[in-house]
Structures are given as structure tokens and as C-alpha cells.
Amino acid sequence: MSEAEVLKAENIHKRYGNQEVLKGISFEIKRGEIKVVCGASGSGKSTLLRCLNWLTRPDQGRVWLEGAEVTDVSRNINKMRQKMGFVFQDFNLFNHLSAQKNVSIGLQVAKGMKKDDAAKTALEELDRVGLKEFAHKYPAQLSGGQKQRVAIARALAMDPVIMMYDEPTSALDPQLIGEVLDVMKELAREKITSIVVTHEMGFAESVSDEMIFIAEGKILERAPPHELITNPQHEVVKAFFEDIAQYRRKKE
Image (cartoon, rainbow, N blue to C red):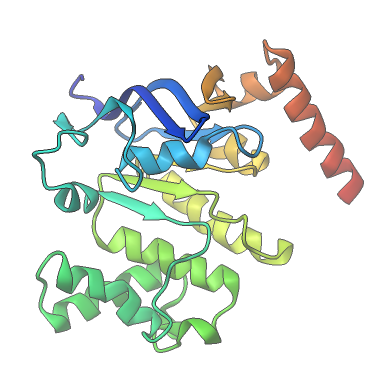
């Protein structure tokens, strides 16, 4: 991979029983780039993201992060994952810990940071996502949008080389989606290298450098966002964006 590439995936395959979910996915992300992965439900988007950091082990294919092979079994995958911030659909917060401790615990355990230093960093990252005053709150006291912002702060605290978002707004009520997307837009302006699985096409078009459309486990089309949305080359892609546009019109 070139020096400019942060992450490279080559020929990723994944099967669950008789179902082949990924059928040879290859792409790369350069430093400072934001790529959005889109497609219909069940197309393999989330599985792909999990294969990139080996939360799910691919059956075939290779992944490199800053030139080091993630899929090399001799490597310490936990050390590699520290460089990949991952934001889940369902927050994955510790319910018995405050927001600040949810962010600081990884710094203490994974990076060996002293408790006071970790707490300070956690507070800085919560401030970054607009939640400094909620540092003492527990997940049960937070809205879904606030929980997801804590999860983003937790990922950022590890100082990753790439951020990965797996449909970060899909579990949120409609009125809470905007606050999470606003944080992600601000991070995009900071040119934090990111790959985002999302159905939020307005967000995708406004921040991404390239959109990758996956259908039936393969990359069907990839292009700059405006080009892909307004002038898709495949009927499947065209129908997907027409359905989204129709849904938007119904909501208005």
C-alpha cells in the first residue's frame, strides 16, 4: 500500500453457513479521506466494517492499517484495534460507569494511562462532543443521542488513525439523529480519516469524498457522492436512491 493510504482491504470474503455475505471486497482509504458505505439492509455493510478490524474474522482476504497487516495472525490484534476507533449501532457503553469513566477506562486498561490523566483526557473528549457537563451522568440518565456521543468520545480518546462508524444513528429516535450527525460533521471538517456505514444520504453527500455502494456482498458502484446519488450507472443503485428520495418526500 502507498504511504498516503491509511487502510487497504483486498478481496474480503465472509460466509455464514450457506450464505455468502461478502464476495471479494477491495478498496482503500487515504489519510484524511471520508468514505461512506451504503446499500440495502443485508448487503454486507456492517459485516465488512467488522472484518476490517477483525471483530469478525474474514474467511479470505487481507487488511492493512498503515502498512501493517491486520489479518496477519501473528500480530497483536488488540494493539491494532487501538488504532481503529469503532462506533457501534447500539452504543456498547458500560451501564455501571459514568460517561467520563466509560471514556477513560480504555485509556487505563489498553494504554496504561494513569487514572487522573485518563480522567482528564476523557473530559476533554466529552467536551469535544458537547457533553462535558454530562461527564458524571450514567448511561441510563442519557438520551440515545447523548449515549452515541459518549461512544464517539470513547473512540476518539484512543487517538485512532481511522474512525469506523457502523450505522451510528440507526438506533436513535428521529429527533436525536441530528445531534450525532452534527458531531460527525465537525470531525469530518477536522479531516479525521473515517469510514461510515449509514443511510443518512444528506450527511453522506455533505462530508464524504467517495461513496461505495454494496449489493449482495460486492461493490456494485463507487464514485464521489453527488455523482453516485444523481447519476448512478446501475439500476439497483438508481432504485435505492429513488426509494430514499420518495421516503424523504413522504416525511416532508
